[in-house]
Amino acid sequence: MILGNLPTLTFFYILLVYFIGGITQGILGVGLITVVISLLSFVVDVKETIIDFDVHHGNGTQDIFYENENVLFISTHQYPYYPGTGSEQERGKFNNIFNIPLPAGISSEEYLNVFDRVLKKLDEFKPEFILISAGFDAHEDDPLAQFNLKTDDYFTITKRILEASKKFCNGKVVSILEGGYDLNALRDSTKRHVDALLEFN
Ligand SMILES: [Zn+2]
Image 1 (tube, rainbow, N blue to C red):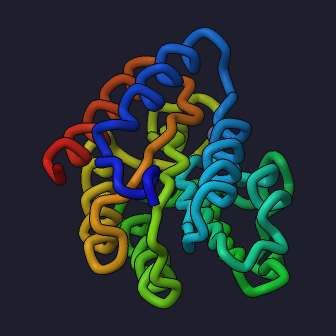
Image 2 (image 1 turned 180 degrees about the horizontal axis):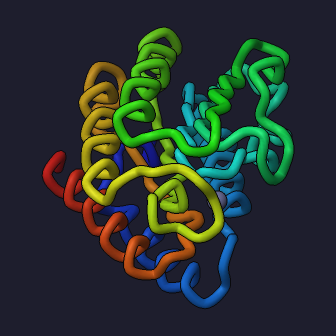
Image 3 (image 1 turned 180 degrees about the vertical axis):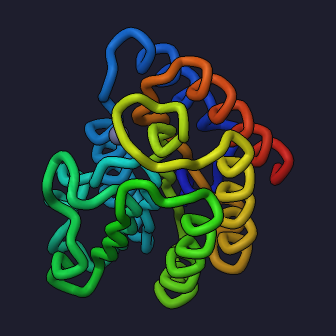
């Protein structure tokens, strides 16, 4: 349980490194998420949940953990949209994939209401570790997709995940930066996300 007992702050370097990397290199989150969870699975036998609020479906992450009963993958994403996967019918071998496909144009308020379903699923699964696949391209200013989240919504979403995590995870939460293609929105949303993480600690 060595890794599991490290506090959230210990992992900020990962987020920051990938924040810098993301600006210069674009989409790169899925690979790192996979490496982190795979390492955790190897080192410790714990139930893990990945919450992916990037506007794109995390198809690579889903594929890798599709038959892993210790990993619950939850994704909210624009659908239909690139990469084309992420329907509700894709449930995983152990009902461990929970896709929440959402239409283009969804408002901030509608998204936050839907997010209750993420928290409910978390409650059911009771993970011992949570990994946030933190893409900020569902922001209203993002040029790639058509969601309308506002900067402060990322604070709210993060707080809600962290509040829910208290029941099972004891602060074991890692966040890894994924997409975000309007640099101002990415900067401000990431800051609000980190504000919530810091407040939690
Ligand atoms: Zn994305």
